[in-house]
Each structure stands twice: as structure tokens, then as C-alpha cells.
Image: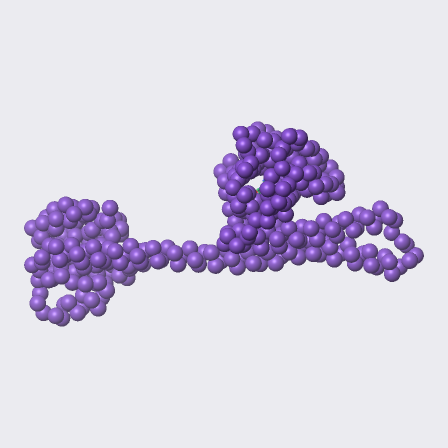
Length: 369
Ligand SMILES: Nc1ncnc2c1ncn2[C@@H]1O[C@H](COP(=O)(O)OP(=O)(O)OP(=O)(O)O)[C@@H](O)[C@H]1O
Ligand SMILES: [Mg+2]
């Protein structure tokens, strides 16, 4: 309900205006002079001020000037009421920042029409101001993200380059050839980094396309368990290096589904990648597939710290990363955004749960057509 501050030293006028405006659905606050109006403006934050020009203690023009000079009330619409015919005060009223004036005695419906028009403008103005503020904030976030994205893209590339460089230098120095195991270790380190780099880039590109509905699903018959197996095997080296076990509990009776295999594979890989990233050394991960009530379900559970309850829904938001990870950010907070968009594009749902005392579980379901 819009609140109107009515300021006049004549009781009759104030009372009439209060009755009339309250009957029209407005809340009202009243003051008898400029000083009181100034105080109430700061306390009550009216949406509009209707004020007489000629008043004792402080007149409407001086009051308007002071209201305008205060940042919190600089934008509130002010309509001044004047019995004067002389145009000098009216000009002054507008000069100090009043939006308009109404000559007394006034015709109530006309006053109402003006009040409504200025309130509409104020609402639009407030909305515009809020959008502008949001835009400014988004611009700041965008700048920060561009910086961190560039920074994050450098990490896997540095590892990749370092590993390959070592191999080349070693090839050029035949006196100390690397053993096969050493070569394998460096090559797989390079491969894992290149894979991480591709995942980050692909997530950025696909989130953008999926949000714009520009990514067409390329469906084909998919053996879902085989897909899980192949995704899991891509993490073998990394999980062994971290001594994290990866169990699979797959229901052998899943029907073949028409899915975009490439996208689904990346959903599962993002989930396993997260589970591995957020599980400490020596922990465990389990991937499950099942079928229930015309839906296929897939879940990735881990023995990490879990997700704060307040963030269970937020983790799917673009760029969201739970906790204070600014100092050791890894990734963009885009993995789950991509997963959600890709699962939804298949008509499915994805959500996160905490397993009491043992970690997080990311689960999605897909309809069986
Ligand atoms: N298994 C998990 N255990 C605990 N927290 C998780 C888990 N999976 C996701 N999260 C939380 O959700 C956030 C968002 O995950 P998401 O995959 O979208 O981003 P990311 O892994 O931080 O970065 P990116 O995937 O872009 O490299 C993570 O930063 C983390 O805080
Ligand atoms: Mg991730």
C-alpha cells in the first residue's frame, strides 16, 4: 500500500485529504509544518508527499529544498498545494525540486489522478534503479569471472605443458632415459590436464547454448551401464593417485534409452569429477544406476564433507561454489549448471542430498519413453 505524507497547517484540509485518500486505498501520515514533515520523511519513507506551500515555522519551498538535499528522499515525488495565484512561488516550488503544484481549492479527482500518475512514475523509477544496480553488480561479477576463468584455464594448461616439456627434454638427453613407468605417468598427467581443460571449455560453451535452447539433442540408443563404466574408467588414474575407491552398483536390467550420449557422458563425468575433487584421500565413491516407476536413476555418492544444507539447491546455479573457495578455486562452478541443463533437456531432474555423516549424493532421473 502506498504511503502519502500530507503536510498542511489547516486542519480541515488535512482531515479531508486523509479521509479521501484512505478511502482510495492509500496509507497516510500527517504533519502540520515543514519541520515535522522533514522528520517524518526520514522516519516513514513516504512514497509521495502532498504539501502546502504557505506554512508557519518552515514553508513548503524550504522544506522541499531540504528533502531534496537528503540522498534518501531526493527522489520522492512532491506535490505542492498552493492557494496563490501568483506564479512566482510556483516557479520557486518547481525550481527547488517539487514535481508539480496543485492550486487550492482543488478538485479531488484531479488531485487523485496526479497522485496516481506520480506514484506510477515512482514505481517505474524504482524498478529501473533496482535493475541498474543489479546490472552494475553483474558487471562486477562478470569482470571477476573473466579474470578467474582465464586464471583457471591456465592451470591445466601449465601442467600439460610442463609434462610434455619434461618428456621432450628427456628425449633430447639420451644419457638418462625415463623408464616406461615414468613416461606413462607424465603422459597420463598431460592427458588428465588436457581432459580437464576440455571439460571446462565445453561446459562454458554448452551452458550458454543450452540456456539459449540452441543445443539440439543428438539422441541414439544408449546402454546406460556401459556409459557409466566408460566414464568411471576415465577417472581410474586420478582416483588411484588419490587412493579413492570407485565402486559401481549397476542394475543389470536397464532398458536402452534414446539419449544424447555425448552430453550424458559429460554429466556423469562432471558428477564423478566433483565427487573425486571433494573427497579427501583414502575416501570412496559409488556410482549407482537403477530403474523405478518408469524412470531411470543414476547417483554418484561420495565420502567427502557433503554440501551445506542451505546450498543444496544453489549449487546448480551458474558460477556458484559453496564455502569460501576464493583462495583455492578450482573450476568455475559451471559443472552442475551444465548437468542440470543437460538433464532437463532430456526431460529429467537432478538434485543433491547429504548422506548422514558420510558425504554428498548427486542424483538424477531420466524418463523412460
Ligand atoms: N560431491 C560434492 N561434495 C561436496 N560439494 C560439492 C560436490 N559437488 C558439488 N559440490 C559443491 O557445488 C559447487 C558447484 O559444483 P560445480 O560442479 O557446478 O562447480 P565446480 O566443481 O566448483 O567447478 P567446475 O565444475 O566448473 O569445474 C562446488 O564448488 C562445491 O561447492
Ligand atoms: Mg564441478
